[in-house]
Length: 78
Image (cartoon, rainbow, N blue to C red; front, top):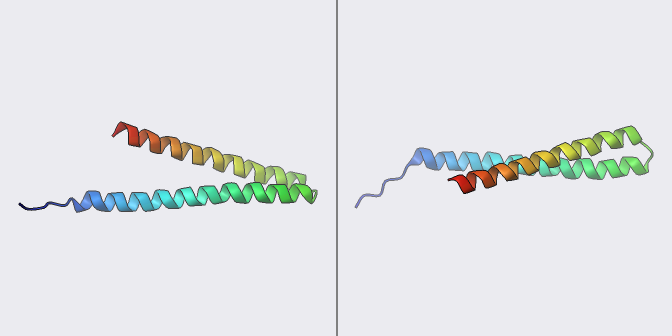
């Protein structure tokens, strides 16, 4: 019996998982950076910059939630 491997599908799984893994890591890093720097700047009295970085953290958290929901959707529909 001959084993047939679909290299195109295998390559697709590899590059999509690498890209999404990198996207999740960068998004989570943006959440941490925005939240931590926002707290530091608020303590130092830089209110406008703190609000801006809190907004960055909130947008990144929303993006991460969207990635997770999309991933669950892909898993459950296939």
